[in-house]
Length: 387
Image 1 (cartoon, rainbow, N blue to C red):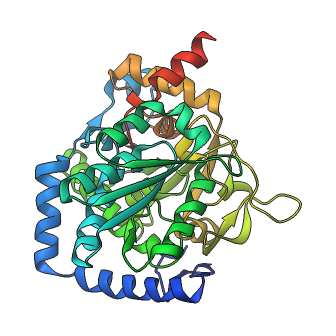
Image 2 (cartoon, rainbow, N blue to C red):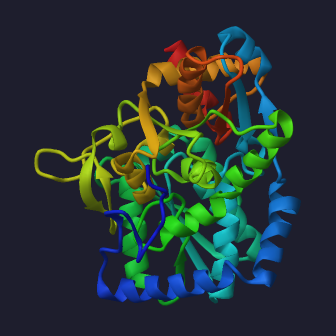
C-alpha cells in the first residue's frame, strides 16, 4: 500500500490541470502563492486565530456510548465537525482560502455549493472580510436546501440558480468555472471540495487536515492507541481527506470512505477528466459524466477527489456504499441515541460505522467524522418520513 503524495499536481495517475491556457496562468500563480503562505508564520498565526476564536476549534472527539452499547462491538467515537461555526467542516477551508485570497488582493469571491454548507461557510468568510460573494447552486439543490439559501443571502451573498443539466452540484461547478474563466483577473474561486485542477485538491486537503491532526492527538490521549478505522462520507471528498490526512502513514489504521449507493464514483467509476482534473468518474454510454442522485446533496457528484481515486487504486483506503434508506435510518438512530442530529451526508458514514463496529471487538476503536449537523436536512427528512 502506497502513501499518497502529490507530484506535479498528480496523485499517481489522478489529478493534474486540464484547463485553458489563461486559467492555467491563474492556477500557476495560485500554486505559487499557496506554497509561500502555507509556511508563512504571520499567515498561520492569523489562520489559527480564526480556527480558535471564530470557528471554535479544537472540537471534541466524543464517545458515542449509547450507540456503542447498542451495537456491542467496537467503540465508536465522533469527530464533532458539526459543532463548528456554520455547522460543518466546510468553514475550515473557507477561512483558510479567504485569508489566501486577501493576501492575493482579491475583492470578489465565487464558489459552488451542493448541500449549501460550503456556500454558507464562504458567505460567512466573505462577510468577515468585506468581500463580494457570488455562490452558484443547482436549482434542484436550492429547492431542497432552501434554508441554507436564505442563510447565504442573509450573510450578504448573491446566490445564482443553475438550471442547466440536472441543476445539481456538477452543474454549479461548471458555472463557477465559467465565471472564473471570464473574470479571473479580479476574482478568486473558493472551491469547497478536494476536486478541480491543481492546486485545489492540495489546498483543500491542507486546510481540512486539521480534522485528523486533532483526532489523532485526541484518540491517543483518550485511549493510548491509534484507532482501528477512520470512517468518513465521500462525495467530492474534502471531509474524508481531512479525516484521513494524518493517518495516511499509519498502515495499521483502516481508512474507509462511504459513498451513496446512488452515486458510487469510487466503487464503479473509471478514470476520466472532469472539471479540469482526472479522477474516477461515473460515465454514461456517451462517455459523459453520468447523472447522479443522493438524498444528501453534498454527495451528489459523479466524480471524486484525485487523492481518493489514488487511495482507492493503490489499496491504501477502502470505499463502500450506503443507500439513502440506510443513511436515513442512521440519521434517526444517532438523533435518538446520542441527542446529535447529523447531516444526511454524515449519516452515510454513521450507517457504515454501525455495520463495521458490529464485526469488531470491544478492543477496537472507530472514529466517524461527523462532517456536519442536520439542521439543514430536518425539513427534507420530515417530508420524506411523513409523505
